[in-house]
Image (cartoon, rainbow, N blue to C red):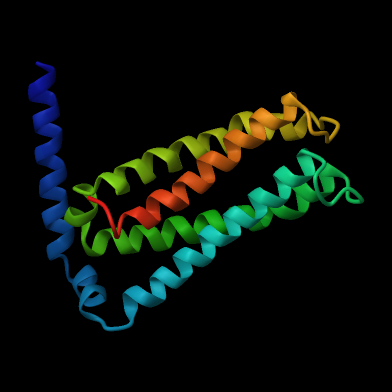
Length: 169
């Protein structure tokens, strides 16, 4: 029964991929010389913004940088930029995806990237947010090191897996 359900879902995804690929708008983007490089520039700018805000927040949480600025100020100042980076990355990434969905769905690195992205978003907006809101005393302690390490590994993992799409299947 489970095998039939998975086969049906795979069939639906394949039909969706074919439909998107043959739609006119992705074709226009795909056939343009400059569209994909421009869209990917926005995608990379968004990823860079996410990684930059994540690194600064974690440096402050670990008391390794920005010590003169209270943690809550860093978090409140960077929250907006993080969200802008996330929206930019996800919207531009979606456009790149719809141009050639079959290529991406069949790419293991893309699947890993999407799994890491989902985990990173869930972690960022649940567990990590609670830790930051609890306003821990910034310190290089296990209580701060573990959540920071998870945050950094997840977000950098998204970036590394994204880069691997071009090199691995």
